[in-house]
Image 1: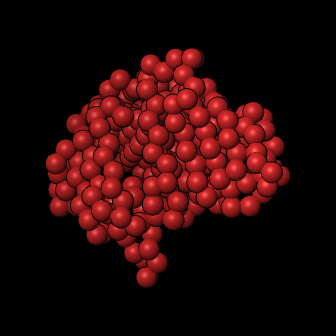
Image 2: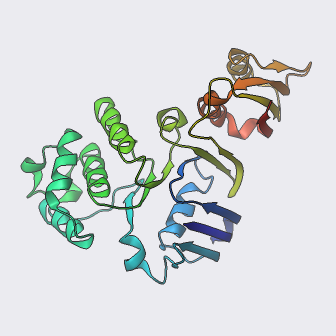
Length: 283
């Protein structure tokens, strides 16, 4: 469904993406993780056809930059930063619904589930909404259409705890009918939704881990982590997973339960800058 072939992107001589090769199949649900500046948002923007870049990107065989209207009609997208739109909310909803030929009331209904007072803000300019209100509306627009591909860049960043729960419940309702790419700093939040984890660092993919939907509690994974230097906080976290260090406390080994791998990677991803090498393999 989605192909990235040798994707490179440079901003002011800084290499942001460096030779990305990646295929995402229909029905896969991706957690795209990595620290700020790793290249996650730039990769998403290339996928949406917003940037010129080296290499090739395609969605269902279509170039998203050359065939933007056709490609974007297949996508529900929630950006990391809301656009500065001065359009009234009601007009924005109607315009978005018309683009994908959906009923505006579907967007209204999802917004209300997220706790957004749609009826009370229809005449207000989008740009004058609070951060949380903007995010809820953008999520409602993305999920209120029959998009087969959902792309979400830090979608829960501005949501209150109750809205976060409802948002992830809404995504869970789409597990069987949409391919998902969710960029997030909190893998623990999306671990129950995704079946593949891709971690980026310095413009490259450093982890690409698939998780079978039918993984059983008996699956065990051998883990080996090499650190650039000892780190007491990370050592405490790894000790909690029953991993054992070498004498220098820079090489940690052990086993984790297969179904726990996403939660484990969520913990590990907080210390990306410390990790020189990480491997997970069936024990």
